[in-house]
Length: 440
Image 1 (cartoon, rainbow, N blue to C red):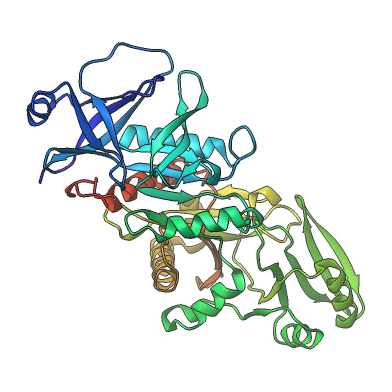
Image 2: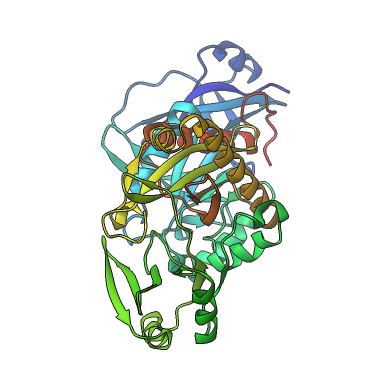
């Protein structure tokens, strides 16, 4: 069995695919039986497509990608094909197109055929996909008929869209194929996440007291034990809907996130707070969580964002650590809510001096422990971001995890995250370094 090697695949606007393997072209032609055309295994379901091995002239609109390929038993295997799953917007697709473009370009550089597709574009009978490839020359996404992907990266934009019948049915069917890797199948549920982690001794000490917000009695119980509490929507995202409750002198102060500021309300009793909350929540599920006094940098609290991903060996690793400092008057550190990005090394060195590296290592180890625990309980995870709290004493707390992390703005973390997506896809498709060529 031949070990995978690198080559270049050119996709012509006419639909022809051309493989260029500069270091092995002569051998590849000979193994093909000296024929001008040969068949290739392009997807996990052995869909065949003729691959022209001769040199092709430049054509406007062609797309050229670095790929991994292997030849064995008179069959050429090319890939990996990495499909980004999102939803249609009528004429195209929804989602963060700049993020998708970055992933495509990383595949082009490292070796992977990245395309975007939607449930409507899947032909289940033929195991083919109507997907979109990015054309750098024209700076646009162009539609192509493509083989079924080896790897599906779930980037359905919202929980509401993920619950649509056609979307949930597609996710179930994709996840059921043994020879297709479908990772990060859904958004996390904050309450369910804590219930899972509470059962892991190695993790439970990092968890603030957390429960489902259900009654006035429960609210009274929490505020009697903690100086302040946070109220968070179970299905929330990017700080939306978060509230903070604490007693200031003889009144209860409730602060609620709205855009980039916090709106403040005062109440004479917890009962009045509960009456207000019931109207605000309007049937949405919320959790109530023990507030943690966070360490401060330049007078404002911050939390620690950690990106963990599976790498080219299929192992969890910490891709990067970022610091997010709360904005003026804000109750969260989310950048869309007024938070700011700070240098991790600078903040940790400023606060913990010679212990800064030890604190950083503790953050990494804690994140990996939590990721391993969730990996044991939730199938098909390959990446997540985490929000951790850090106190003045260096104690770590886990606040939440996100199964569909937004991109980190730190260039080194961003570069590492894109590389891991491609390398992990190569690994699971058996088209990475040192992997065999049998796919599916």
